[in-house]
Length: 467
Image (tube, rainbow, N blue to C red):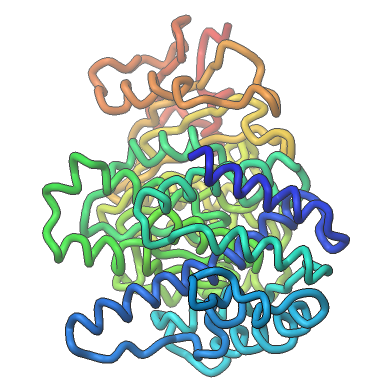
């Protein structure tokens, strides 16, 4: 781990010195596209080797003169970098900007098959630019990344861990970059509770850096579970399990890279604005067994987008909630992070959506997260909304997460702060089934639906004996 971490640290230090790079958001993005092309090269080389063993020819996705071992790091007869053929300086920047990127970006416009590798590559590079100004800087980065081996499962795992740290650092930078990073402790708790199984389809309509899909993959592929899977199970996990969309080009490339590094070879994740789909047109075949998401909140959508929803609102959180409700299969399970305001706001749009949610879905659990979970980029109080498509809501179990210290940027939420919630969720007989909020670690209580007034389902409005 130390050797690979040192390589990545050296790359970030090199990129920080380049005039085109500004902050963690930029250098993580630039590391991502270079890592992706190295991964793609190693993947294609491996596929080619396997095809030879099977006595068939492998059809490369990338044409020969644009493959990594030709333009990025050509080798001499001794396997060392061929400095005579390796581009550098202005020549390298000109090649990347005017030959390589246009070729990769063109894949999407020339291919309409979402499942094809070419389409996914085109979608990654469609709005991505090389921001490295110095060709000498880029040459140093290429040489370092060339030393990484994506065909080694151990090295791939180490890279995935390091990449998660890069994403966390990007989120900690604050600003808009935070929307791509949800605390992994929260994600892990949500995945543990929904308990995905092989054969489930798992959907996130606001993928970001793909934390939910990656954590669900890790949950499905623990060492204990791996041994029980058939070849068909593995095929299902790799190609028919993970679905989603991401609106931003940065989020899309981060998410795809994160999934690939963690071992999801063929996710059904596409670049696009989830809210442009008319939810009236969804059919059962379009829906999913499990929905895990932290959709953008506080945003505003124009009236044209609002036409896709029965209840019109400019608030993205209400539009996404309607989308997820319509995307859930019968018997399906959802866990979604929402701002607390959704639970108590009483304007017509919010009331209408909550009425439908309570009448047509079983909102069985609401987790009140502590203030500071999303610092430094957002101080909004948030909740996790758990609901199933198994009938209407009869009672809601509330859990108030209470860490022993105030959360800050440098003292984030930990998985241990959510372990009591998970334990109680999985052992309903141990929960507080009364409406009185008892004074014990964690705090939980239960409310019957007929006790809720004006569709205010917030924790603060539905608990007695606050301490």
